[in-house]
Length: 178
Image (cartoon, rainbow, N blue to C red; front, top):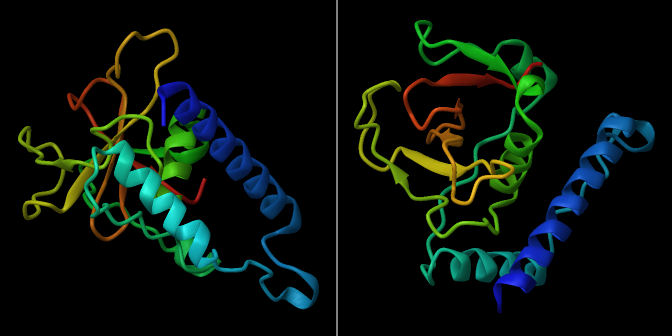
């Protein structure tokens, strides 16, 4: 698949994800009678996404686990930062490109850069200390940048998400409640 087709596919995935997200927000995420109407993806769509993600990352079959979404409104209400010393940022305050990246992470890709999903080693020690392989990093597209730019989302193994706009110099934990 050439890069233009990949870009078209990525744009289509993002637009579909945004449309689904808006529909879920407008519908409150529930169908008639309060029961969720969301259906799990078919095996065919899952296989296609996994294959695309693997091809994007250079053919590796293993993919980082997507961040765990909040399980219920109650779970969202009880969110606490992983490290009280680390600043937090409301999800709604992130740039649109960061929200796009979070959507790709939730769906498991495909990602626009080969290095998306690689292990983030936390060499700077700015995130809570965890074992190797706990954190994964993802590029947040920077409009007008000729390369990956400096913006990233880093996810933790239990679902936490961190935002950096300055290539790991500072981090903010993403607060999913707002």
